[in-house]
Image 1 (cartoon, rainbow, N blue to C red):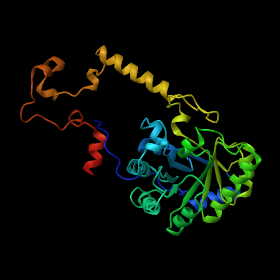
Image 2: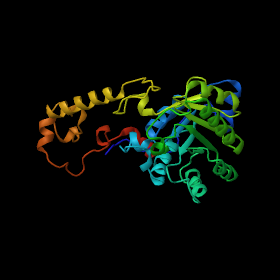
Image 3: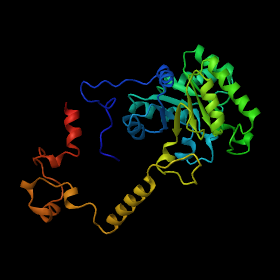
Image 4: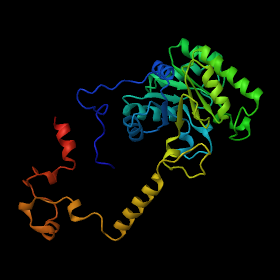
Length: 321
C-alpha cells in the first residue's frame, strides 16, 4: 500500500491566483475568438491532475479506457459503472478544465438514455456527456434535461462492426455533405461541440467553417477549432502501432520500464532498501544497526517523539491540524 495520504479535496492554487473554469459556453467563445481548444483524455486522479495543471481546456473520460486501461479489444465492453468510477476519479482532480464523460455503448440507445446521462452528472460530477452518431432527438432530450452534450461524428469507434473496422469516413463529396448536414443538425438540436474523428482535412475544414459551435478534431486536420488525443497515445503508453494522426510527445513506456527494471535489480541485489530508507528503534534504547536488530520488540516507554517514529511526517502534521 502507499503511505502517501489521500487528497483532502481539490488541490490548492497559489494564493490570490484565480482559476477560470472552462465551461461549454466558454468553448463557443474560444471558437469566436479563434483561440484553439486543447483536449486530452484522462481516466484517473493523477493523470487528470497533471493534464488540468498543464492548462488543457477539456478533459474527456473516454470510453477508450476500455482499451488503454482495461485491455479490451475495443470500446464496446466498457460499462456505465466503470465509466462512472473513472469519471469520479478524474473529477476529484480537476479545477479548471471542462470534464466530459463518454456515454458507453448501449447506455444511450434506448429509453434509459437520459437517466443514464443524469447519473454521469449527478453521481460522477461530469459537466457534459459525449455521444456518438447523429442522434438528434437524443440531443434535444439531453438539452431539455439541462445536460450539456458533445456530439461525435465521422469515425465513431462504437460503430466499429458496422464500419468493418476503424476506417476514414466521408471520403466522397456526397458523404462529406451528409456529414456536414448531420453536424448542423446536432448544432441546431443544442450540442455544445462536435468531435470529428477520422475524416479528410478538407471535409473537417468545411464543417468547422459552417458550424456555430466548436469542432474538436482527432485525425481530422488542423482547421478544426480544437484537437484531442488519447493520453496514452501522447506519451507512448499503448502497445499497438500508432495511428497516422498521433504525435508522441514522450516515451513514458521506456521511462517506466527502465525504472521498474532498476527497482527489480536493486531488490535482487539487496540494494533496496538502504539503512537510510529503513525505520529504526529509538537511538537511546540501542546503538547502531546491530544493536537495534538484537533488541527485538521495542520496550515499553520508548520515545516515539522523533521523526523516525512517524511514517509520513507531512501527512501526520496535516492530519494533526
